[in-house]
Image 1 (cartoon, rainbow, N blue to C red):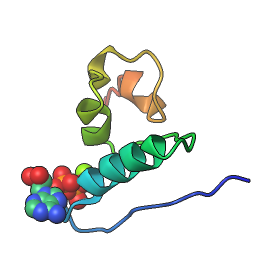
Image 2 (cartoon, protein in one colour):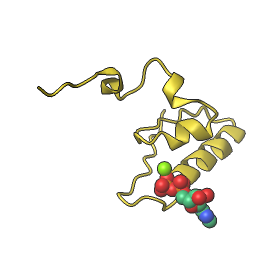
Image 3 (cartoon, rainbow, N blue to C red):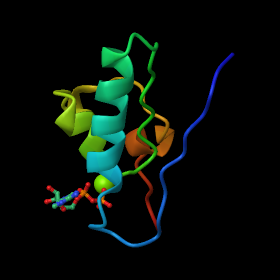
Image 4 (cartoon, rainbow, N blue to C red):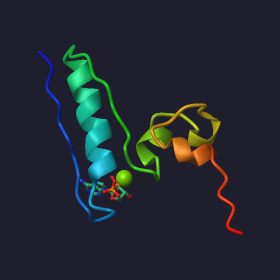
Length: 71
Ligand SMILES: Nc1ncnc2c1ncn2[C@@H]1O[C@H](COP(=O)(O)OP(=O)(O)O)[C@@H](O)[C@H]1O
Ligand SMILES: [Mg+2]
């Protein structure tokens, strides 16, 4: 059985990323299999986990690689 925990709040700076990272860490410590999904375009969680968002070839924000030109 899988459990999905969503941590969201429209406000910034209220501890969403910190709580997600620490909750994931402690669940993993208790031998749960954990997948952290970073849906914030600021990608702080991705950075906290040691990844450079600019170096990732695929993200959920595919439009990152599109160039929009207004004429
Ligand atoms: N429980 C806490 N106590 C004190 N500072 C915290 C706590 N949780 C987060 N912070 C700090 O608050 C700031 C914002 O946290 P962050 O997790 O990045 O918020 P959010 O993801 O909601 O924007 C960070 O500097 C973080 O270190
Ligand atoms: Mg955050």
